[in-house]
Length: 369
Length: 130
Image 1: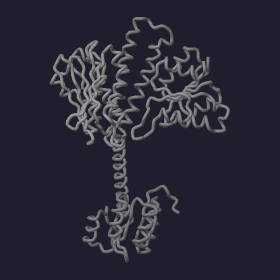
Image 2 (image 1 turned 180 degrees about the vertical axis):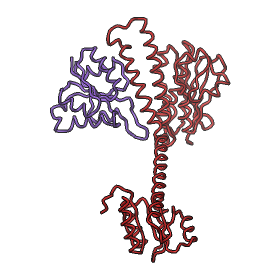
Image 3 (image 1 turned 120 degrees about the horizontal axis):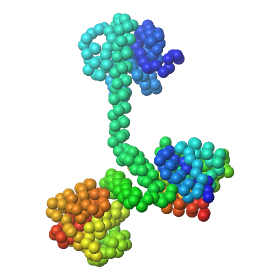
Image 4 (image 1 turned 60 degrees about the horizontal axis):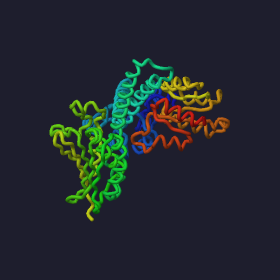
């Protein structure tokens, strides 16, 4: 066993015993760890058991020759550097090996320094290759984990700031001068909204087609609508608004990821409640038309202009209108609803006359009955 | 009033939480990682532990509670109530619900971070059976 176990590992494949022994002597002296193989087949076995950083392989050997070893290594361990050693310094052979992916070649007879130089360059090349590979892998991982990264790097500090603010907000250390209370309260409101935006965005990033498909079950439209009404009723009443429900009893089956879809519809209802006129009515309808399930949610608020309708489902879009801008919102509610509905093969359309309320209509494909 | 140990790697969280608890008259001990927290448990025998789940390693809180509840070394401390908390409830790509896991790990209560002082007092009082 070489005393330099930690040094780069070099495998020397050569049928000439003298060549192997002198290579071993030299590499040991230079601080490398050396393995030896006396033929191509033994070389492959050695690589499989303990892959080296670099291989010095004789081109001409009985049985499996250097080119075959090279081919195998390029296929199975592409990051191992191959240096070809040839006794007949025919340029043609060397060129062939280089074309196959050998890093360099040494023509016998060569001086020890020449070998040292070629090996050092080869090892440097491998180091750079591995470094590049590591960076690529790291980048891919970062992209794949972007959402997790956002969770950690943004949610944690945001949560910490909110927690710190809780000390003055709760007046835990004694009463806060009244002049400060309003400011603290406003900071808390803004921060809570920011946290909500971030959470909604994270939830949206997690939504994926495969997940929704895997959770789909066959549901009747009417009970689905009843569930929606049940969820939304309290909010509508709490806002001092009225609710009207018109759901046809006729059979209409849809294939849906129940929870995601109800959440998406609930978002639309919440949106309608938010922009409804005080004391206005929210109308929820569900019916079957042209082999499609149609679910609509109407309010009596200021309505959506044709220009706005084009952007209203975009992520982070918020109305420029003053009366709407003043209401807190993440700008993500409708975007997330559309994404869910589209993942069900459906669509959402908004129809509105400015000043006369807005109607959001969700269409979903029905099962043929 | 009770002796409460906070195990959390975020010093802002520790500062805010201890200010709220101390103002309510509790004695507060702090530890900034799981190992220090477990040592503190033996040295101080607290009446309640507030334990953050994601510290240096992402599920460090779970290993703390497992040690506390299930190793002979902590036999005398295994009944200390633990309030687990986390700013993250789910990790992308993992079908792993942190509040549910906290229950499975025998955490007595779970609190989302950030929490209001009202929520904190409610959970603390419940665990101390005030």
